[in-house]
Figure (tube, one colour):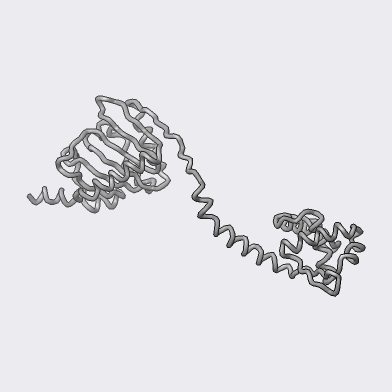
Length: 263
């Protein structure tokens, strides 16, 4: 390699050429050919102090790589290195080739699902679940909630809505109308980052569900005192689809509250 290059530049050249499949001999011959321009095997052999047979096999590899051109002058082969811009062309061609096989490779890939994890929470640890939800990466929590029973479970002191708003986490809420404990205006919902609807009147239950990211939490009643948190992508996908179906048949919470007031 020419002495005009610093050791760092030499290292960079070696690393790049190696990434194109050059071995040390390929690099040695190729750089010499760049300096010499057009040449036959014998002068290059003398310059590098390598056997002609070695130069010939190396040239064959470089021609195959597309970085050296070979022409005939009578009975002799004349070799000339392409302009270094050829590496850009080679990269573009490689990118196109890779893009062409990506769908084939993707069809072979088996998605590895992380094993579902289940945690059981007893009475006093139920707020651990809510604290987990406040770390939602998606910045949104979904709930199907029986408000009266849920409030009894988490207690008055936790202030979940306040903490959620402070974290900038939105809430999409489906609520059991017969179990509701408050009336919310549209302004209150907006202020508390909440979008809420009442479930159809014939749906009435005491348990609640929260889900976010790949986590689903199921809350029983205060009297039962046990609650479950499941980390599972497939279960969350199922619950989300059920939620969206229920959402589509549920009525806006503030609309129903206003109808009740006007009635």
